[in-house]
Image (tube, rainbow, N blue to C red):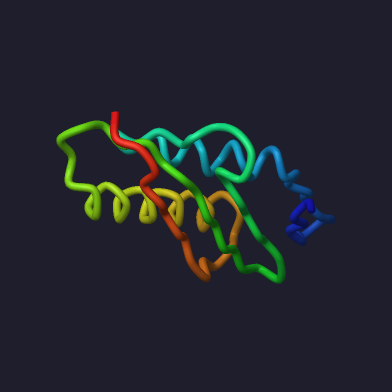
Length: 99
């Protein structure tokens, strides 16, 4: 479902694929994190100015996994807040693989 942001002279529609790309790029901007590709690896719910994200990661071996997950959560929250004007209800990160 697309997310619509009302602006002064109309509205801006952000498609699900654009939201997914924002989340993936934000997560993978954290050194050592990679979003797992495929079905049910990324779920984004956005509506009424609020967002909830669930995603699965692969992590580079040797990293402190809770810290990596926190860094990913913070980066995604920053991107969605600044670029889409949403408040974050939650970002659930699951580390599914270590490579």
